[in-house]
Image (tube, rainbow, N blue to C red):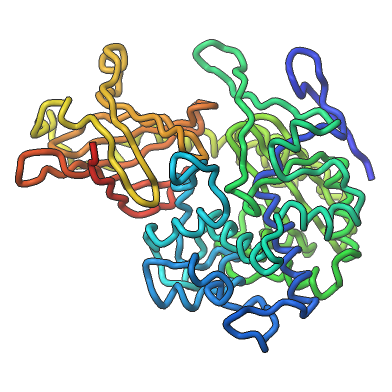
Length: 485
């Protein structure tokens, strides 16, 4: 195993080492799937609903956490299985903006709190008909594990069942443990285009994200995990390895750099390249990026961690594929251009925000129709039981003078992914909302969504509707916030 570190972990002079800690983000998902595979293969776990039947991938989640797992659709509630949740085929869109640090304003959110919020979130497809990546369903699967083990903390289970047997002593599951660790925890950064310098991003607590993305680790520890995976070695039995690496749903019919369309297993994207099987998963956060690849037929695996958003994934994937090409002896002329792919993705994301108005409101009148009420009537607090509070305030005079002309703003500081939202009036009661991460406002990660207000028969603003969508354009549905203050 080769472990190396490059660049700066924390400015000005702490360099990255093989033991330097980074957020692993969504690469956590494979560990949750492995834990469930251990439980299922053991045959030692059953549900209270069907105590004679051992836990399986086809066990409905509601059989384990019936009081907590309630969806808007009754059939989905009773039939969605562990397999459905881990393969992102539940019909639930991302709803990442609904993740909150606290759902009551007092207590830190738990996986159970996240699961109980699902009843307020719209499904956008029938179950098992469409791949829709959803972190919240991994929180539900995490709650299943903790419930069946008598309320044990998932991080403790992963340490006992997987990390300790593999010698992954420098791997953690909470921010508190990561900051207290003997290893250095790399700081996160974003590029401030206006000032031409890097800005520091605060560390994020991720208790509520749990098995969807809470891991903190190093390339040295992940190398041990990759060896376990490519060799199908202990502490996981071979049946468990195969179960969580078996693709369950097709994701795209476009092979891209691969030979075949991609599929999704449990915490793994799957495909093949030049006849070689490939499993991979990325992890992306507000200021960190991870890439994990395994080619089991070659007993080959690579992991990269970085401490910027988006660019860490870009550089990581470019480096990974350079190593894969060299391992497989692929000629330069036959190599897919990953640099071009990532530069194109960045340009498309920037252009998407720049052209948002044309995309969302192509038929808007010019000039737009006036809003029904004075601006101050739109300010105040709006509430949705899944997305919690959103308090709108007047924008600064400077923001109103810029283009786009921002008239209202909202800081969603209770959200897991802290958003700063800016509202531009378009026409009548229709607005455009622009968003960016408050702690790391990288230009390429800015988003947008159409928004609209409704006016009640009393002539007062009644509600605010936002059609949230993620950076890939996957829509969460129209979310209505009722004005409460």
